Image (cartoon, rainbow, N blue to C red; front, side, top):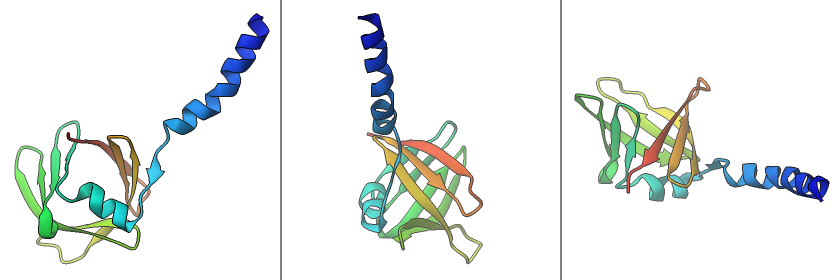
Length: 111
């Protein structure tokens, strides 16, 4: 009986792991998820306002712009003119942004 329970528990591990994995978001999902949302990080918040405005606060306010295009979230922070785009993945309230350099940053969507 113990062998059966151990086998059942081990066979359930891939299902449990898959249920906790991040899912990539497409352009429309990125827009609907981020528009009007606030993402909470350990020491900062990021607000995705309507009309593409973006507020990042880590003790001081930094204003920028955001958009979703070609399956990525893109941001632009003055005085820079260029945009940087990120892949976006979600797991419930957890959200992960992965930049062109391969580095990821995770936050939580505020309720």
